[in-house]
Image (cartoon, rainbow, N blue to C red):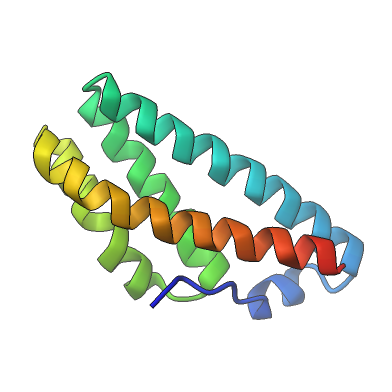
Length: 115
């Protein structure tokens, strides 16, 4: 099941549409940068840094989806594999994690355009 955008907490923090849109725009930029940096660090075999990025992406996704358990299930295996320097495991789990992150980014983008 893809990670779904949950606006309930965000709407409480940013009741106005413009503030919410600005937050989502910045969140989208950060997620895209972190996702690309994750790919780059894995290609460079900078596994400790990749683990940190996977953890950071997990936190961002957990906030935006309101489902920390699902985000952990998707991103913790990648984080752990990267921190252990297990390139093959990290690559195996990377495709799944990236797919979910890109779907969440797409949902954020649609929400920004809807506002």
